[in-house]
Length: 258
Image (tube, rainbow, N blue to C red; front, side, top):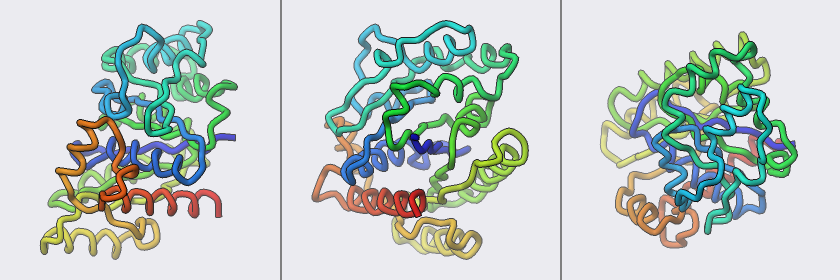
């Protein structure tokens, strides 16, 4: 059975998508079969994994069909990246999809129903790249997930987004998905300034073992190069970000499989 992880943040610019695709690539490098599902209408994860419009169904069609009771050819929704990560791309149609989901009599579980198919079940791990709005689509993602990874930028005001995300997970756990847990808080964009160090220390002090041991360094040039080349930092042996994300992937395995 696939282990499903939502990568979520209420704040933009924290490296959520970079985290999703690089942990996915790291898990592949560690021998796992991985699927990324892009739930953000901006489609950044899709682009990072090499998506070019091909006329095949995207995640929008998957969700619309599930809510409308229409059969989906799930095999046709999966694309294959050069990084070894398979993915289901997003499309701009996700922008207003919550209105359509809300009309479903079981609106909290539309995505969970859609993901229960033999094609997606073949994967060891499925990572959901969620958008920043804490709306019904993100609730659907959490209801379909076993756990959540929360990236936190080592910058001022980072605690605001972290608190909102943790409260959201608690709310879902108390109501519609009793199995949901926080897999880890990931300190990201660490740049060795006093402010960055102070925030990292505060998160560790406040959340202890819930925080991943590995910290992702702030390396904008490496991140931009990965986007340009449509590859993942993990696959660049000279990338400090890549080495860090591979260590995070190893932590994910230890936490999920212990």
